Length: 225
Image: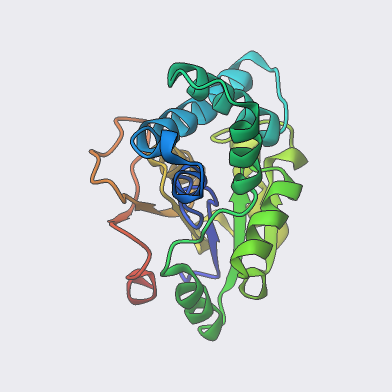
């Protein structure tokens, strides 16, 4: 089936979720994070994801910004860091996450092919707007879809339904790209073709569906299509 739309997860797929902690560690006064930032970034991300799943299961939705703050507070306490100014700096940096280096050229290539492109993310509209503006990739995106439209986090099927509703295509005409194995599984189960961007070389998740393709980054996406 012809691919009509290429849709991306945002955090960890287009945007580097470790960038906030890494940048704070490199700034003046960031010496206390010099060794701690990788673990802090890992814990922050892990709790951020687990809180979305737990809230979805419990029916206790809040926006992704609240989840992001709660996860950071847990990670800071786990690292033994009590520093309100550092907390505020890390949260500010999360609105300015770096895009992975290959992202601008990859998106531009998709648009030259005439494909529709978009983001489908747990992020709130405001967070996504900030990250897209900071990374300067908005010109290559036709739509930015947030779970806030349905009030539940991925991988709930109602989130994936936003894509065919917006682009007027069948699920099989969508290539969904995510760096999260569980997200790729959810999208594949919904009927999308899926690419799992496995940046860390992890095993495939043992879930109810598997990605169609696996790649270490986004550089080969144009050739895959």
